[in-house]
Length: 269
Image (cartoon, rainbow, N blue to C red):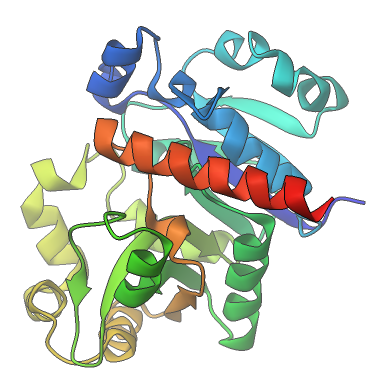
């Protein structure tokens, strides 16, 4: 029986523009780019559907027919477990729109997070619960990423105790936690409006995050005080989850790791 956590997959076009990787693959949306023989969105939805902790799966995308055109997803669409939601021009508005009428807690990820697994989802949800979080961001350690693949990521957030990579996975306990996202509503992509980020997070907090001053946990404690809610980092053990598909290089790496997983499953049967 599906769990109580609602999942949201962000699969729309940023600013309505076709992603370069989609253009290269000859498809309309980045989420349709094939990796290891399957569109990226199928890998992500399969992982969510296989998780006993996840109930409804919402996908924010401009045109629901994009999902309906994928035979692999028709069963979930037919049963109502997979629900297309109209994407908005920017990520924040898409999250806010897709969360309307959704049951909480809400697990948020992206359609290019093809190496997501049910185990990683469970680890994220358990970490949120044990830390008593209102909101959470998933990270993994540099050594875990490089153990998964030596070219998995080239940029990391450096802190006093370690270096980390973001895993494109987020969690909100309830609607109150949406207050942080409301700060950016109708603001477009964050990088285009840096002054909004400064006002929201505080200049000193951003400088500490950017230059790795202090620990990751201490940084999020400051963010928590700023937003008056408990925002925590959850450290995932599987470094592969930090390897999202952004270009041809990472697409090849993801395909290699997915093929390796498939071979391990086959060998175990």
